Image 1 (cartoon, rainbow, N blue to C red):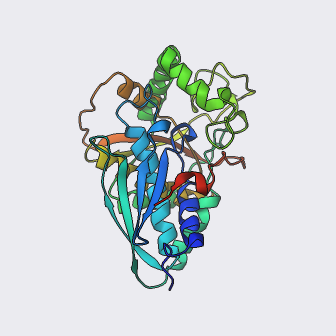
Image 2 (cartoon, rainbow, N blue to C red):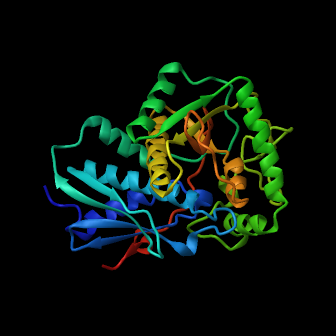
Length: 319
């Protein structure tokens, strides 16, 4: 079978799949570079980093980890086994990982289904129904995250209410920070967005009441709606809290999101407490279930449009 790195069309398919991954504020902070047709490199794009919101680069690494998973999956569906090694950026380097294709058997039907979910996955900021996820579906999501070396912690009962309160407080405090507001405004329509950012048509309505089940864009005029009474929350955690752990969290997150898509489950993110922690320079003491990296809201929501995407030539560097 033809090496996917040996032709322009093959490389374009890989990069297009990788570029469909979710990212913080849809910044799409990645670039790709093919080396000698032997391996493809994933680089962070420093021009798309959020210095105020993401001073440690945690969200950037998680975003790029999601793109790395899509890249691996696309290579596997092309009939090759992706051998990847993480190289978290340091000392001014932007290189995060490299992936080399190795001859392998054909991809399984399950892998093809997961790959097909890439183009169907959306971040859904609209109200979800009150229908609870079946235990079997939640088990599949937990298993998907564990395959990538992370953990998925369902949050229910009083803990869910406490977490939502924490999200609401963090959202309010972030909104009072002028640097945060400036970054958010830039990536939510203030800069004449074309192929990145979170334009109004994917922001969803503002919630009615005190619950904050979506990120607040309080200075953007949006319709209002009543959200589900008890949002279903899960937290992606890792055993460590460094660049390699963040890349791992991103890959685990994306495998989970694609698995959820196959089951018709929608998702959005409530990372305000984690953003506030990073902005204040606080370190996270290890919890008995690991370090929280992503707070995810799950449920059954309406069909929503896809956020814009940068074209493949824009994220593919010349080798």
